[in-house]
Structure formats: C-alpha cells, structure tokens
Image (cartoon, rainbow, N blue to C red; front, side, top):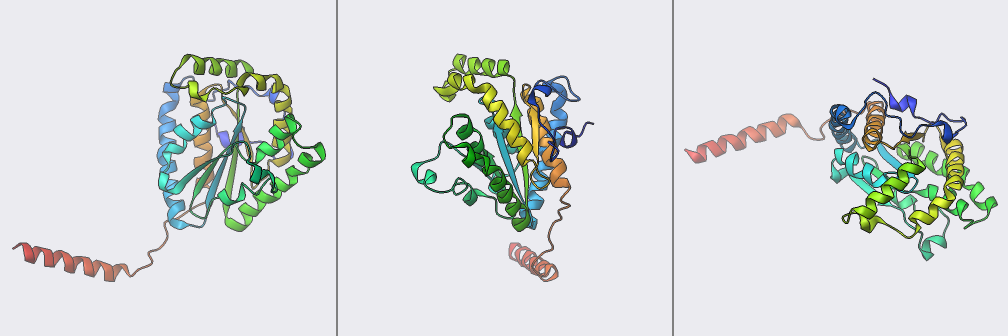
Length: 284
C-alpha cells in the first residue's frame, strides 16, 4: 500500500512546480468503490486515535485546508473529519477579515482558535490567505506579504514546540477544467446553488497568479514541524482517502497511550460491589 504521507509531502526546502503534479492521480485504487474499504478503516482508526488524544491531553492536532475555489475544503470536513467525535473537534472558517481584524496584525484573528491539548481543530482557509489573496489582489504591498512567510513559520513553530500541536497542512489541487465542471454542478443543483458567489468566475482570471502564490507558500512554509501535502483532488474519493491515511499515520506516530486512572480503582470496585449487593438485597 502506498504511503501518501511520504508520497504527497512537500519536503522542506524543495521546489514546487504544480504543473508537474497530476491533479487526477488516484493512487492504488481505480474507483470510489475500490477505495471505500480502506477509507472506512481509516475513519475507524481516526476515531480510536482521537479518543487517545482527548484522554491523554498531551497532544493536539491542527489541520489546515487550503485550495482553489471548489477544491473540496468543505467536502473534507464533511467526509473525513466526520470520523472523529465532534465533542473533541472544532472547525473554524476564515472569511474576509472584519474591520477590527484588519486593524490588528494578520495573525491576531487566528491564534485564539489554535487547538488546546487533547483537541483537534480544522482551519477551513487560514492564515495563509494573507500570503495568497492579499498577494494576488495587491491588498498589501510585496514588502509586507513577503515577510509573512517567516512570521507564519514562527507562529506554527510556537504551536508545535510550546503546546504539543501536530500540524498537517493540505493543499487541495484540482485542475482548471475540474473547477469549471464543479461550478456547473452547483449551477445545476438547486441544493448547492447557495454556494455560488459572484467571484467564482472572475477569480478564474487570476488562476496563474494563484498557482504562483501557492507554489511560493508551499516552498517557504513546509517545515518538519508543519509540513504541507499536495493532495490531487480531481477525484473526491481519493482526496478523502489520502487525507485520512495521512492523519492516521501521523497520529499513530505520536505513540499515544490511555492515561492511568486518577482514582483508586480497587476502592471504586469495592464501592461498586457493595452497591450491587445492596441492590440485590433490596430486590429480594
């Protein structure tokens, strides 16, 4: 079985050329049906591993989802993150910043949403918008956004080293043709027309600019403590399979264990037996 953790990672210091990546790559499987048993097994493992993380409270997990419009960020949240207990998961979406957020540094609105120990947090879009959208649309000057890569690296290093946060960043890569087809599906499906925005088609004029911005972000901020993965996402089922496998492999590597009880189990067991005996006597 191919390890997508090893195959799809952006190795720190490597060059990224997205035109050399096949967004229709589908790994070891040829269809959704063929991939489903492995995917379902991954979801079951994720559930177990999240339980250990929640119980142990030594680690946390931050999942960052970025991609071009219609890349499947919401789909990952719906189909992959569903494998975890919602009591220990938060999903945070970052939209256009408010006036108050703009008045602060660009990480001000992000840091409060970082996961606490024992918790999983998913960023649906993230602090990377501040080296993507702002760059493509000249919302801030190049000297400003070009310094943000190192600030992002420092921020993520802080989370990893000071709070035991494991960071996994996924770039969902679809082709321009696939994006247009997904826009058409939204137009044709009344249940999904609410997702259509005025910018869907106008933003396609900046496709090459976004690709260049993503390549720089992937190159400059894929680090050992916070790696990027390029996820070929033309096939939704492969996108979900690859991300679920990477999460499972990464969490397995933490070697988490069920914590020892904080009470005297022998004494509690005696109380249980006494209560059970009293109930039997009362029922005679």
